[in-house]
Image 1 (cartoon, helix red, strand yellow):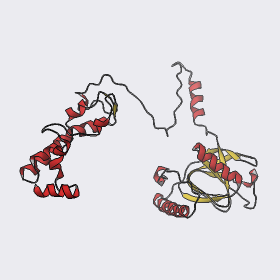
Image 2 (cartoon, one colour; image 1 turned 180 degrees about the horizontal axis):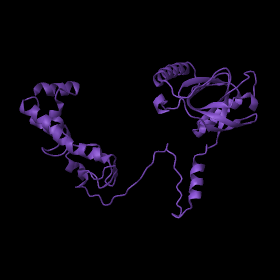
Image 3 (cartoon, helix red, strand yellow; image 1 turned 180 degrees about the vertical axis):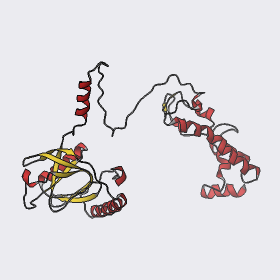
Length: 312
C-alpha cells in the first residue's frame, strides 16, 4: 500500500488504482460512484434506443463487475475498497433521470415490466430505399373484365427517362465497376446533376467515336444504367468517374440538345454472371481509382462505400 501511494504521488497512477477511487472522490462506503449523468441538468430527457438490449445490459453491469471484484478481493489481489469502484446499480441509474423515451422493436420483453411506461406509441418505418406501392381500394363487385385490364396493364413494360452519358471506345457491363474519363461538357454536366439528385444515369455507346455531339442514329439502342460511386475533377476541366453497372436497358427514344442528352428506355432481363470473378475485378478497379485520387489535389470523394456485386 505504501508503494502504491508513492507511485500515485510520483506518477499519478499505480497498479490496482481502483482500490483508491472512493477516497479520491471523497465518497462514503456504499455510496454510488459519480458518472456522466451527474453533469446533466435536472430536467434532461433520456432516450434509450434498442432498449430490449440496452436495459438488460445496464441491469447486468453491476452484478458482472461485483462477481469479478469479489474474486480479486477474496484472494488478496485487491483491497475491499475496490468494490466501490463499480458501475451503477439499476436502481441508482433510474434515480438519475426524471423523463425518458424508450425505443424498441420488442416491447413484450420482460425488462419493461417494472418501468413506468406512461404510454406506448407505435411507429412503422419503411426503408427509404424501398418504393411505396400504390394501393387502390375498389368495390368488391368489380367486373372481371376491369380486373383483367388492370392486371394486364400492371405487367406492361414501364418506360423511364434518364440522363445519358455516351461512351466512345469502351463498354460497361451490368454488375461490374469501371472508371470513365469524361471531357465533353454535356457528359460532365450529366454526372454532376445525377450526383446532386442522387440519381443513376444511362450509359449509351457511340457507333462513331469521332462525333463530338452524337446524333440519335449514332447511339446504340442497348445501354446500361449505372450508379456514380466516385468523381475526380481533372486539371483539364474533365472528370474521372467510378461507376457501377446496374442493369441493361433498351432505349426507345433519344432526346439530344447541346447541353443534355436524355432517353426513354425499358429494362431488359439480366443475364447470368460469374459473381466471384466480377467481385475480384471490382476490387481491383476500386483500388486503382483510389490510388489515382490520392495523386490529385482536387478530389471529390463522398463517404459512401461502394456496394459489393452481390448487393447491386
